[in-house]
Amino acid sequence: MILEAYRNRFRAFPTGDNREIVNALTGANPERLPFFPRDHPNLNASGEWVDRWSTPLFFHHLASDVIEIRSAGPDRTLYSADDVVGGSPEELRANIRR
Image (cartoon, rainbow, N blue to C red; front, side):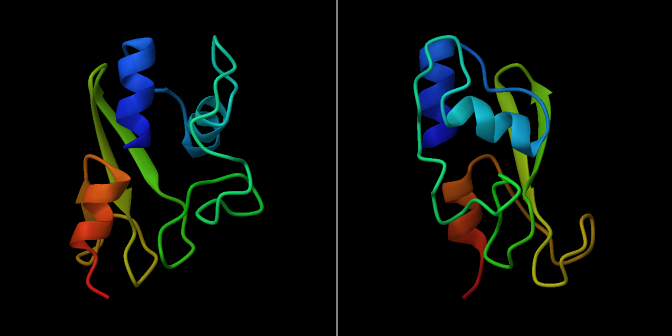
């Protein structure tokens, strides 16, 4: 998982909002190490990591070593009944019914 690889390398998850996290993962980090490319299909034109409904993911840091990732789900509204919540993008994908 991309976020875990970052945490293993830098001993913490990247911080900030969606774009700041994406920037850190695409090379704006202390070692200028990209964990995925800027042209990744899950990034929108604004540089945000999006879910399958093209809605930006919401990252909530619960602790320095715990991060919650929330997809707004099919209604594209955060904190509604159809949100998908996980600790990683992979976990979100596993919980999204196709």
